[in-house]
Every structure is written in C-alpha cells, then in structure tokens.
Image (cartoon, rainbow, N blue to C red):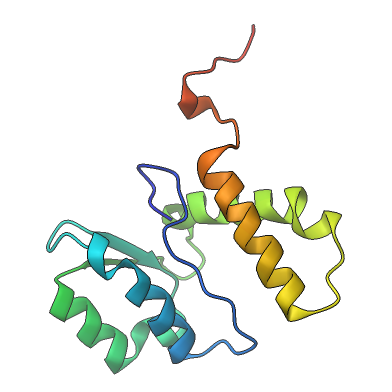
Amino acid sequence: MDYEANKIVAYKLSDRNNNALVNDTINQINDLILSEETLLQSDRGFQYTSHDFKKYIEEHQIIQSMSRVGKCIDNGPMENFWGIIKVEMYRLTPHQTFEELENDLKQYIEFYNTKRITLKMGLSIPT
C-alpha cells in the first residue's frame, strides 16, 4: 500500500507463505522505488528477515521499517485495509476456488483504488 495515495500498488496471492510470495510481490513495485526515499514497512516474518530480502532492500536503497514485537502501530493503515476488505468483499461472497477469490480480490482492489469514497476525496462528515 502506498500510504500517501492510500492505494494498493502491489499484491500477490499464493497458497504458500514463503519467500517467493514476498519476492513476487515486491518486484511489482520496482519502477516505483525512489532510492533512499521509499519506505517499506513489514512485520518481522521470516520472509522480511531473509538474506534475499535484505539484499533487495540494500540494492534498491529502500528504507526498511519493521514493527517491534507487539507494537504494530506503524502498520495501522495496512491492518485497516485488511479489516475493510474482509467486511466489504471477503465475508460477503463465499469462494469455491482459489481463482474465484483471486478474481474478486483483483476487482475489489481496482474498486478500492479508483471508486471507493473516502474522506481524503475532500468529503466531510456532517456534524
């Protein structure tokens, strides 16, 4: 997620939580990386502490941020997104196959990035 734009800029689904999943996802943002300016926040999962990931961070001169154990405040925007997607998409539609879930997720992210109404659009809450 690009926190400034509040848009999902890369995602990948897999039936395995492994280094390849992280590598495939992060490679989607190669063209967006600004050396020594791009901040990448992650948890402390083994994928984000691996030698390959550390090498990627160093080669692209990315600023890495990791939540401290039990302190995930800097990952709040992403956690908020997961809460929204669970309520607005995932729990509303049962998925029989991985492909159905993948297709619905792709459509939802397109909606989230381009059509979902947010306060950042200049709307205000009536008092």
